[in-house]
Length: 70
Image (tube, rainbow, N blue to C red; front, side, top):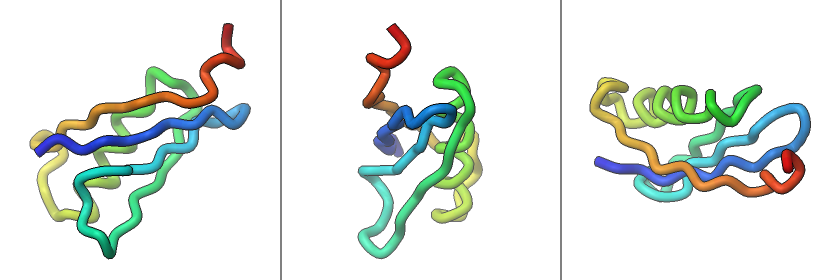
């Protein structure tokens, strides 16, 4: 299954929220130091919440706040 996540840049961290795919009673959040490192913690939190092997989790990440990097 493919899940959707939003990564919001709030220096010096990227805050990650799983926005689609989790059951309604679950909230998936994490953080990463670099944009290139957002997908692994998103995948891990989804895997932990859904009790699925992380290798079976696909994540589409949308970024917000990346204009600060330009």
